[in-house]
Image (cartoon, rainbow, N blue to C red; front, side, top):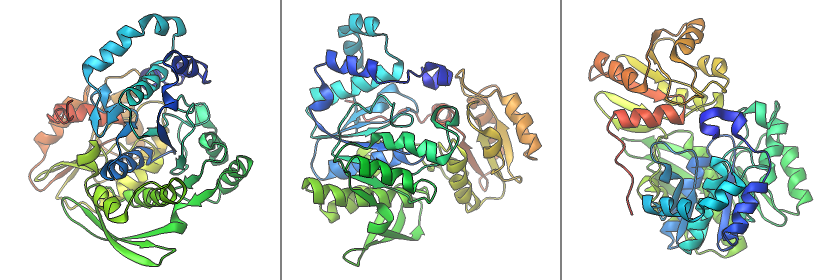
Length: 426
């Protein structure tokens, strides 16, 4: 299981996923789909796309990974996770075939999601890749639209050491004749995507050429933007309940994607309904852990930033948070470029180094040693709960706490903060 042991768990082909899908009567062919890849932002983008489609009246499947607390977060229909009973029955009903095929955890989870969406007869499913694209288990679908959010350095040991190599893996989701939306145009990767699109006779759209966004203000609940539709030269007021400043890129991507879906597929996505959906993404889909304010006075904020590009954006926003003293609970998995990430953290915060309860976690003591080399000072804790409790004890109402570094850290912190009971249950 990749989330536990990393690269050793990956099966670098689609054979098992195809066998599972054949066993299940090709469920991925029984609904329309949108396929989303990218280094950062693909989870937020997936949830926003699902919210837009759902708010327009479609029955929407949403497959994302990893989960924060509950496995069923990965498989939702109109924002509601599949039931525990459904998961248990699926495994029980297909146990002999699963034991015969011996799929990875991710392979069976993908097949399970496809089966759930087919069983529930969704109109359309939003499918987020797990890792890369070309050999990702989700890449057995032929979507009506492919979206690639951005390319930066992550999982180099698997995807390649250059941005061009990483882009080529992500570009593997581009299918013949299927349009592609690129969230961010980058000089280093532009040729890669152009060549893949030309080879597949796929039309390539750049989000920033279709929409522009200017943030005008932010309050405790919303960010507010002026959104400009470039072709019509019209401006709209847009607000979103997603607080991360980095969401500006993702919003442009989903606005462009919706425009392409209307033009190419004739989907009924009116702009008023799209804007309404973006104001209540959390309510519609259950998205959490993206610059999420758990509480105020003192402030506690969670963000799943887990690589250098993600941490860069998180630290930009953290710098703007007013506080008498800032505290950071942080932990990483060992297969990330932890040194590069730590170099981005501020030196004037008090640190609580920790490790999540997963074999991939970098031990807190090692993290503390690496952080000391960057002049980041704090103590090491044996669990996320101990670190969070220590930070809370050291804070007063004018302070602020950031919890970040990985999905595992944020997920365990949410449990320790009594935030686990948030799933809308079927």
